[in-house]
Image 1 (cartoon, helix red, strand yellow):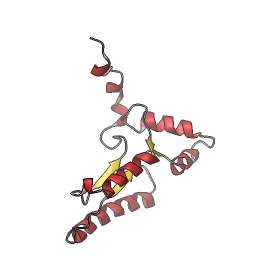
Image 2 (image 1 turned 30 degrees about the vertical axis):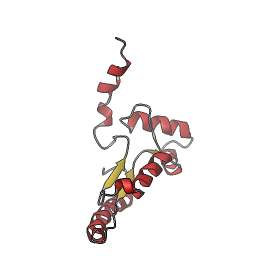
Image 3 (image 1 turned 180 degrees about the vertical axis):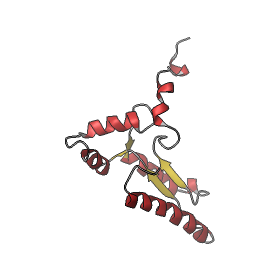
Length: 132
């Protein structure tokens, strides 16, 4: 999504997408798969530092809470480094053998819809939690 980072940061993400697509076409002829992973809202030093650019004394817990409330469709969930590692591991296995040229977005649904509208659903109790 545009506007979330500097021009240079956004350009590098777009470059990765293009390189992934063109490389998968070229290398697919040799049976080589090429995919990329684009995460968002992952609790990392980079994300905490970015928050501290706006609030000097931001804690890791505050960043985690902020992401889970405003940058994820998954209630109470912030992306973790392990989430990215598991996805990359999957792409490296034979189980993903027919996946190439793919951009695996790991963002808790952030780019799927407007997170700001998720309140419509969050106030409802899931059917599985209702007693009969």
